[in-house]
Length: 120
Image (cartoon, rainbow, N blue to C red; front, side, top):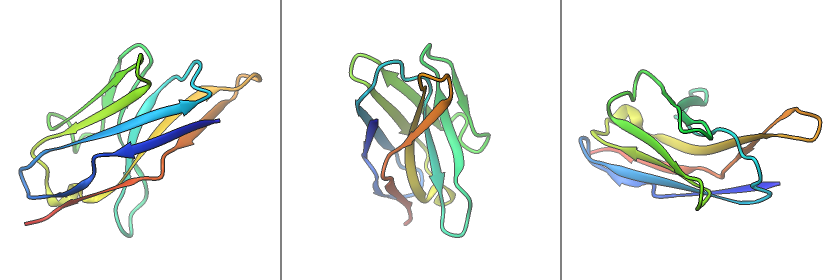
């Protein structure tokens, strides 16, 4: 099992910045991708950004050039730097990671979520 704990959410005005952190613990051997998803009220959960174990990144079009994902493999921690936040970024943000089990099947793990609210 892998446990993921997010931190860094909160209330920010439009145009402001927040940095989310996601610390992984437990059976962290060979974690592959780490990523951030978000879910706004009445909407489906969507991918925000993902980073592979090798450092390759991918972003949702809506956050490109504003959000940056990074990870510190030594600390088993992923980060999401969010700049120029907009009201549409308001959502619960979830950390995700995946690894392969002994049968080679992908297993996903999720954090409990952290609320990000962008409002004046």
